[in-house]
Length: 222
Image (cartoon, rainbow, N blue to C red; front, top):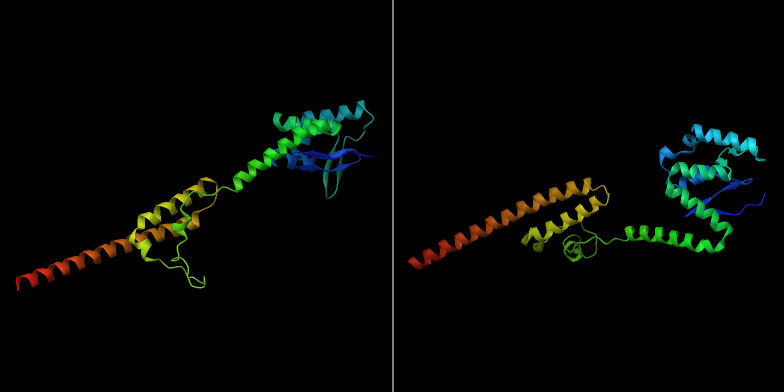
């Protein structure tokens, strides 16, 4: 039987003998576990619909299971499955079928696909807001890139200017759903080391001032 290709948003729905892949429909709907084809087929209302289709039409086999590729269902069951998922997915399926018979409707469907891609693209291309020049200083690696990272004087001279943007970056990544537990632990260890180094430098600077002050006082008393 000759069939027309069906695509739900970006998912192509495979077909066999005029039936549509229920597994592909599940994928197009988002692939949630609660929407698995087996759950739909066990539904009492679905079973009653299958019986009614078999008894009232020439289509004696409204569904077929093919080993290795999954279950295939008739158009009526496609609509029923879409309605079982959600009103939104039901509407997407209706529009996809309409687009097959009314090519002019294809423009609206492609626009919906374009918007979905654009939304995903914008999410992936997000530039995290932090001062790259500050965090990509030469102190992290040697000029040839062969030597391990090292702290430099500019970092030690102003630890807050280094710590704050790095903390901000990790917080942004975490809010976007990234697992930052490992880099966060490293950051906290580095932060403590920087604070300790900052305090040590401040103490050395203070002691140096005291030594210079005493030296100047002794020289002035002579």
